[in-house]
Length: 466
Ligand SMILES: [Zn+2]
Ligand SMILES: [Zn+2]
Picture (cartoon, protein in one colour):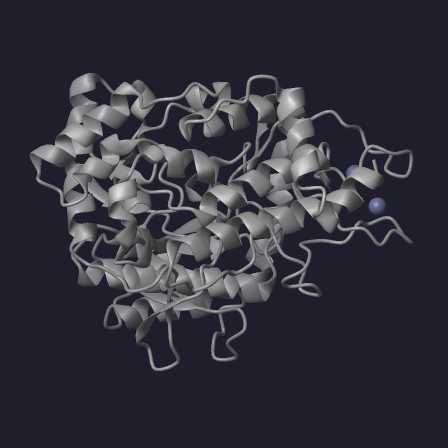
């Protein structure tokens, strides 16, 4: 199973809410497969039928190191050509009262490229360092300019909000949108404070180090629990500069359209599952086993329409809601050499969610092996964080111990990954079992649900086209 970098996907501006990309083969009207159809060799997208066909003759071998480096350098070269350095420096300098600063785009040693952004350091003469956080505009899988702007604006809004509630995160020094004629920098960008520390690596941390970081994480989660929202959605900035909770801007995989905002948890989880159903039906995701994937998301839709939280707290389905980091794998927490947390980074796709999702088991304590193997139950790190939240009398500490229905639900049959059908079935069995049911024989479960949902016209179309 290959793990794709989260948030690496883009959007076709001609179909902003329908499909991410068209198949590149002339005369093919199908959507490109987001998960299987991208080719780094020819920088093109293909539908699931054409990606491995004679019409697409590229080698299917992964890029070797030299080819990968050359591709990265080519992407950076194109991005550098777009950026007006003097304009960017002027914005940064003005944000600090005219303090002189410099930015070297071609200092490859200092440039950091993530799944979605490139970071260039901005050095002020007083020694302060900021980062210019620039979306990857020049990758063939880049988002459309409009979606790039919406995601960036939402992250800027989130950073401003976090500053207001005193949660440690990079301070926002300024930003510019691609679609704003007043932005003379040539690209969308954010200027953020550089936290001079390292991402937390749970796998290599000792038990004491982990406990120390989780304890501080507990404090951060306590801070977030003190600032409720009345709807499920992502923050954005209005024309007058005020913050507003708007539409959910996507999930950690970056493959969803905007959803909501919602006042009710079931509406949100159902809309999430229905968006995946649409992408599966359209061949954009899980195209190697569309019928099986459709059945799985159909099951998740049923699950989402019921309360995913503990039975005794169903009133929380209607709020209050709390801000949640979308990709909290642990490396979003920056720590110093003594494992003091200096801040939380990478707030793209953050959104306000139900309390049991915000404070229940999440990726930060997940055992990926257990998720992939369908092994149910909480793991020792889940229980450690639960214990620390209880010690701090976090108002929703009980959700950390309640179970991981929501975490498994949102992981789905391997969202953001490219599982084989067999792997997806194993992951999916873990979801079903977590919800107190047993699948037993997969073939039987699959057959029974094909019959049960035979009235679903989309499912019939998928089974007929096999
Ligand atoms: Zn190719
Ligand atoms: Zn095609």
